[in-house]
Image (cartoon, rainbow, N blue to C red; front, side):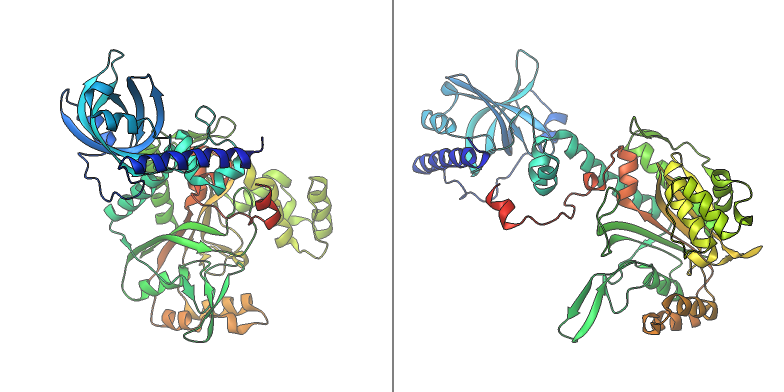
Length: 488
C-alpha cells in the first residue's frame, strides 16, 4: 500500500471519528480559548497531590484499557500523563473520549495524583474538544526520519523528534542570552532597513525587487553595516542588530540564502575590543545555555576555554605552503598549490592564489577557536589598515570548527580613503557606490570596532550539528515540482 493511500485511509477514519464526536456535542473546531491553570511544565514543577487543574495539549499517546484510558498530553512545554476512568466521569463523555485520535488537541479538568509507578498524573473529570487532527503524526517509535521531510515539514519534526525541539529551544535561549549579554554591557539594539536602494556592506549577489509605490528597484540587504555606521555618526556609541540578511547565492552545508546575522559596533573601540567581546559572549552562551565549554560533536570536538589562539593570515599560509611561499614567483606558487590539490585559475595573481590556499586548505582545518589576524587590506575595503603595514587590514576572522564565525574590523572612518576604496571595488559601475553613506562619513564617524557574527553557524558549532538546515526552523529548499507532488 502506498504512503498516500494509507494516509487517505487514516484521514477518512479520522473524519468519521470527527463526525461522531460532533454528533455527541463535541464540535471539532468550535471551542475558542481554554483557560489553563498553567503550562504542563509549570504543573509538574508545582505538583500538589489532590490539587484541581485545567490543562490543554496535544494527545501524543492513547492506551485504552477498556474501562480506563491512560494518555499523554503535550502542550509544547512538557508531557503530562492523564487518566480517564469510566466511573469517574459522565458515561457519554467517556465514550466520546474513545473517539479521539493521536494528534488531537483537547482540554481537560481534573485532580492531580501519583500512580503506583510514581508518575505524576491528572485524573480527568471533564474534557473538551479543542482541535481535530485529520492526518496522523509520524509513527510513534520512529518519528520523522526522512531528512528532507524533516526540513519541509518542520512542524512534524518538532512534534515527533524531541531532540529537534530541544535544539531549537536552545537556539531560542542562546539568542536571548546574546541580547542580554550585549544589553548588560550598554549596547542598544536597533533596526535598520531590510530593503535598501543599494546593496552595500559586503560583496555578495543581492535579491532584487521592485518597489511599486516609488517605481524603483530595491535590494534585500546583504548586510546592515552601512546603516549601523550611520548611527555611529548620529551619536549612538554602542549598537547592535540581530536580524536577517539575504544573499542570492548557493545552498550548501554552511550556507542558506536567508540567514541570521548579528552586527555590533562600538565607538572609540577597535578590533581588540571586538576580540574581547566575542570571546566573552560565546563562552557566556556556551556555559549558560549549552552547559560548558567543551562542545561540538564527537567528530568535531570544540574546546572554547579561553584564551583562544591568535595567528596571522601569513603565518598560517607559510605553515601550510612553506616559509618561502610569499617570495615565490606566481608560476612556482601555482605549481606548489596544484601539488597540494588545488586547481587555480592561471590568470590569478599571488593575492588570489594565497587566498584560495587559505580558504580551501587552511580555514577548514582550524577546529579550535582561532583569531586569524592581519589579512590583506585589498580584501577588506571597509577596515582600517594596520598602523605598521598599510598592506594589511587591522582585522580578525574568528574561525571555529573549520568555519568562519565572526569577522571583526577596526573600522575605516576616513571618508576620502573610503571613497577611494569603494570606487576601486565598484570598478566600471560607479553607481554602486553609496554616496549617502560617504556623505554621512564626512560629517565625522568616530573611531570604532565592528563585528559580524553568523548566528546560524555559531549554533551549528555549539549544538554539534553538521548542516545549517538543522538549526534553521524553515530552511530554504528547492520547490517540489508537480511531478514530485503527484508521486508524494
